[in-house]
Image (tube, rainbow, N blue to C red; front, top):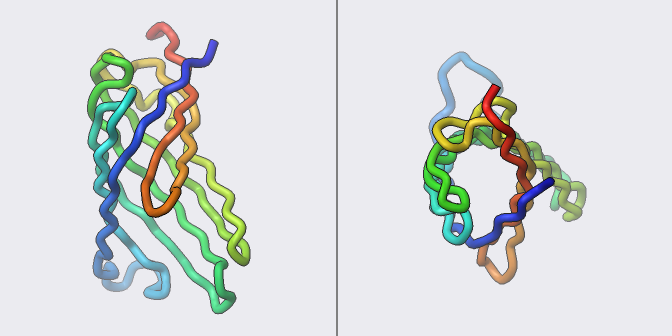
Length: 134
């Protein structure tokens, strides 16, 4: 049975310089720093790769972040994988817990997170399960 967690978060995205002779310089690289509040009391750090287009409102990004803190009072960490596209302003986003990435009391964590942005304020809805460790 899935459990639901929700709350707010702040995020700082910082552009990073391109890595010389690696990848395409038109692909942007950014660091991610987040602070989660609510049912998830945690920080996260990660990296994002993003590409825009000549068409207004169309872009894509992928990211990985490591979340460290407490989820409903259970301490540990886990990784989230993002895959997002925007087609002429219409967003599609998938954020999934990386399988077997949970540590501490979050071993066995699986789930998906949704992000909402209203008037510049960020919030999350996290549907997850916590299986017994193998």
